[in-house]
View 1 (cartoon, rainbow, N blue to C red):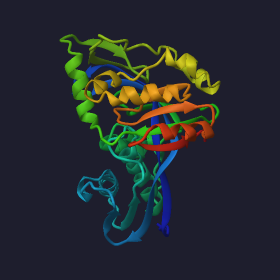
View 2: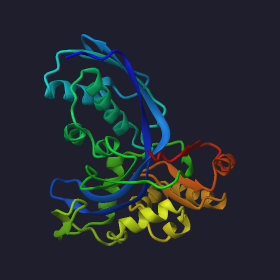
View 3: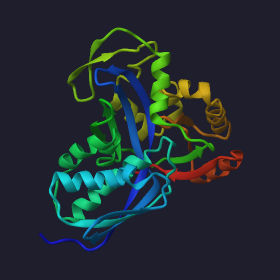
View 4: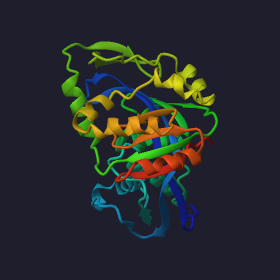
Length: 308
């Protein structure tokens, strides 16, 4: 098979428009329901043919634990690829921020090496590998707007509406996804198990942990229409992130950032994923940029939602 020369890809970050935790699954993961969208905030990856498999990066994570290297090794071993590659990963998306940087990098690695090694694998095959790497990886192999269920790996794409201007505010600390879900579990214990419908219409047994409104978003199409029409004030009373209250207990600055974004003119604000990033939706990129001055000590980035 012919092999490609060097190629480059951008790996976008994401935000969660809402995140509902439906319960604890028998496998120890949480059953979730979340609407995710890609945004114009990127890491960069370059793939060059090589005899050996090498990852070059400025990321602080050891190479053997980096999701890009894990993705490359898993793809190579699964399909018996003899060639290698030099992968250059330039990080821009912070870790521990709830923006999906590591998962997006892994998805880009699968896509890039699929081309570099001329494997010609369909998205479904890449997603099978992606599921073994992280719950968000399958989303980044789809997009740009998807409903994710299960533990995040069951994907239903939606057609996004118009572009939104967003200010990301990342406080000077990271939050571990495992820690956030662990704290949620402490606050929402239940000995019961129930059968619940999942995102693809199948059923699964989960421990409900339903002291909160797990099924708050019943009509996803209705929510997507609200996004299409930029009716964000309605969304403020309709959706939430179930991890937000437990994270705020330990990091009250999250609530302060959210309130300040709204004071600065954001029409919608939410913590993304497990944090620590909080985002605000503004009427224009200029408004978002002006609001960034209110967040001394935090990293701020003005981005747009990706719609194609």
